[in-house]
Image (cartoon, rainbow, N blue to C red):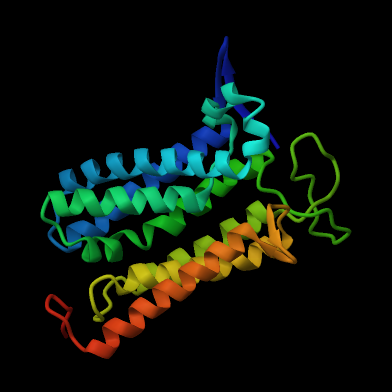
Length: 252
């Protein structure tokens, strides 16, 4: 682990913030590349990326603070220390999607088509961001005796499941799958919904090994939310396919 990548005098470059920025940059580049294939201007993607990235950061921080409210209630000043870690993916996803839909409608762009375009970029960015989590020593797993165990928690030399690596590898695989299917001929938004389902499945698996907030019994908070996302996205696919080809659907 190396929470601080570089230090020049009093200036510190934190691994978490650096890889988070790299994740947004890579995701924006890939989205612009795919959007160009659909005749969408790069300038629009850059404007959209700025709006969504800002919203995702705010939403992710709010989500994390709410989950850890007993701690932040006593240390309110630390709420603003985002560069040192502490973001909720689901919180960022919710606010990012809300702002993205609003922005697309405001600029008269089909948000469902944009969901397809953005879908491969999100797991790519997530995989990169998890490298920052590993170096920062957050989002770690349970202590384990398995050979794969690493001292993945900041300040704790105990060997743990490196769930940061698990998440990075699984998200890279998800990126490869979605990128290969970016030219699907289903209805607009299909790939975005598939992303939500597959990411939620992978996240639920990683949560088995991750030391995180438990909701009840063996069910984690992130798993419960993932189950809701799977059900919602699956229902949306079923209803659209049941209705048949809709206006604006892709065709062969």
